Image (cartoon, rainbow, N blue to C red; front, side, top):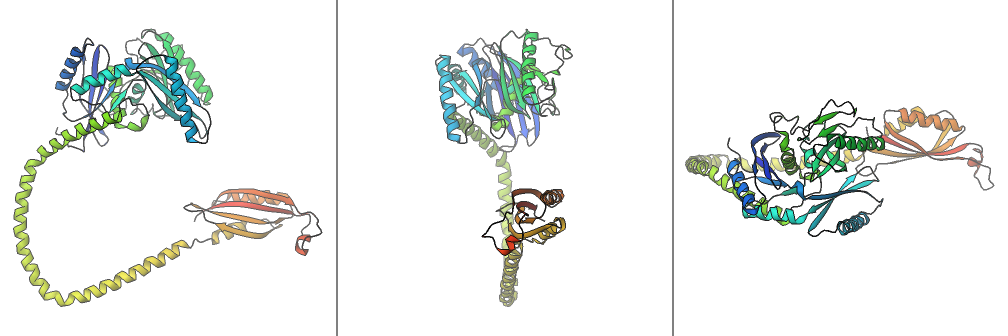
Length: 486
């Protein structure tokens, strides 16, 4: 099938280890995804062997213009998760993150290491920060070798989140909280996602891929903590297990927790049978298609710009080849059309000479019509600016108890708000009447919110007016009521 340049987009996710490269090539047209190619090639980790593997990879993919993302699991050195101290100023949070990155790098005592962070908004006040430390030299080596093959990744990841992203089309994965257990660079990791976005990461510790019981039991304990902190039912968070070398039993009764093998593109029609070994490659493609999922990308901005430029050049060449024949046909068609238009133009000039005396009259009528339309628009704007408030008086008059007296009512319509804000003050002979008035208002369909902002007994005083003196013993109140716009 012919790809339409700049409309259809091809993404390639390339997983790189010191033994094998593994890729998946996906074409996207709107919401439709189609698998173009996939495979793996073994190499011995020497530069020559790696370049040879990349050369074979380029021969086997179908597209010549594509966006490339790579994942290097062996580059992941450490993951740290910190709760961010509360601050109302973003600059203070930024300073805290900068200092924390410096401390983590110094404590790691390694050269050529890179660190990136991603902020997770837990609620209105609380944030969590996830830090990834990677082997920058290893990532730099692969990027340099790829550039020799005219390949410039738009995304460089570690695989920590990509296994989860491979499940992003799975409806069950997007329901509330889910988790993925995987094995990366000699460590087990539990990654918790909320509606497809990363929420937390737990490092299980050094473990063998085949040590299934240890990995699952540790993950189970961490998830119990997660469930307790978020008021979820015990064992309600399912585990997507992304360690395919291990022999697991989904019916494992010892955990009492739903356990499933992570299936790439689960829920995406036509792609369900993609082998599980391609989880990281597929997750990398998803990250390419949805770059806002997180802030982890070890590709430099200049490298991303170069990759986009190379891609667009190839797409432009493809577009030129596709349009060459149609352009020739279009030129011939245009020439013929011009001849027809010239003939029609002569006829039109003759007609115009016959109706020329009517043009001035039409112009005058048009100007009158435009003026009338402008007046109408102006009048309509004035009418729309007058917000009817009769329904406010009707609501208050309907619900006010008999032993209450209103002394003042003011209406405000906040800028661009979908409600009317009313401040009411007066007196009541009984405090229960105020509560009754509030309850009636809150139960009314047209009221968003009703709150008491002042309530005080009227005491005797020598400087009170005769009117106020007659209200001694009553309760003075002030209410704030928010009415929906009708």
